[in-house]
Length: 167
Image (cartoon, rainbow, N blue to C red; front, top):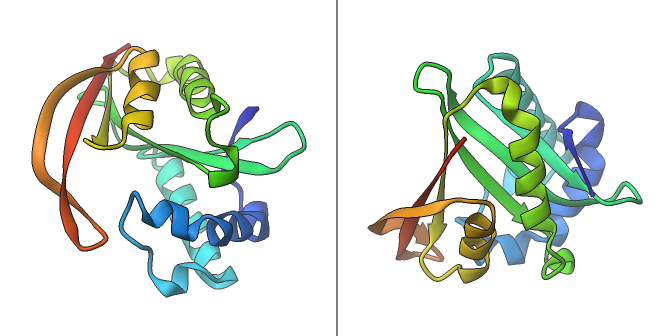
């Protein structure tokens, strides 16, 4: 497993990954627009993320297996260099769950971002997403607070747990 920066050259492989996992991801997050699931939609998405990367507001990464297949995504977003914090988000394709890839990817990301000199990583996880909670706790994140009705998934409000990890 390797973490690498998202690239414009990833558009077709990322589109396949996103289409293959659309139903799976939408069981945990709100659906993306229909336009997202097209070559043009993904090009726009990648361009936006790379622009945010250039302005040091985001670190958009792909999780790639040893054969070069995209198995997941991992992002730092809302990087705040004054507060020295960032928000962590990740997802693993359905065919690749239960292999420890999320745990390994988060661990690798933490090792790779020392140069950013951040002091806190923050992540929000649905209260019923036990697997993601375990990934975070395995990597030194602590639950800080439960936010009631924090997100909407499949039209229903869900509680989310805020996790922090000091660096």
